[in-house]
Image (cartoon, rainbow, N blue to C red; front, side, top):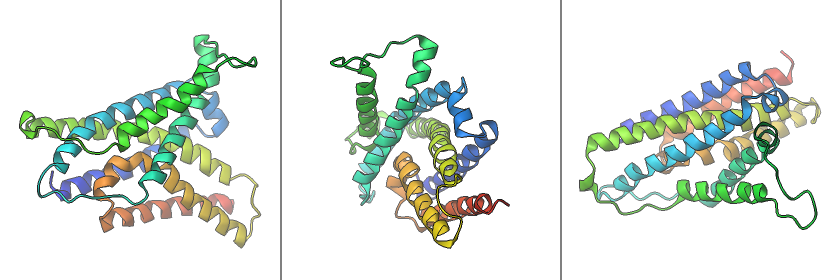
Length: 249
């Protein structure tokens, strides 16, 4: 795939995720409303399933491109930190489903008595490890002659759509309703130092809760200046929106 097409797909991914996660805030106006909604477990479970499927589909085209002689090997310096953030996002999402699964499906979770093993806690710990490995694993050798250009294009297109939908939901949950909702509480003083601290926290959380889920795009376009300019632009919109909320405008 030409570099221009990869960058345009990445740009479309970023903007669709940004606008979709923002639009969902009108459907679920608060964190409590979101978690209490009957749609919440289906949104999260569906997002995790689509994300896993999209990651599996996208790895084959990535692996084949990485095997081409002209492909430039790229390493991402924050990979291991992003792996931890990736695991943490999925762990938090699955753990928040516990009460819903117990109520909707009548599941019994052990561990309430001492000595019992809570299998769901182990599931929350280990299943995100598997998904993180699936996303962040190294490239594999594939026989390119087995796959046509058309097949690889369609496979990656489906993968990008699935990743876009799933990351939009997860970003909305952790960023819009989680981080942004927490920042609007009266936790920090409403003065210049308090505002600067909140902007710093927002920047850190933007890196922790968005970039790890975007890794399969970032591994190819992180060296592009356009990518980081777009990140700064998107974060600028988020910061301006937060400023309006902070000032009660």
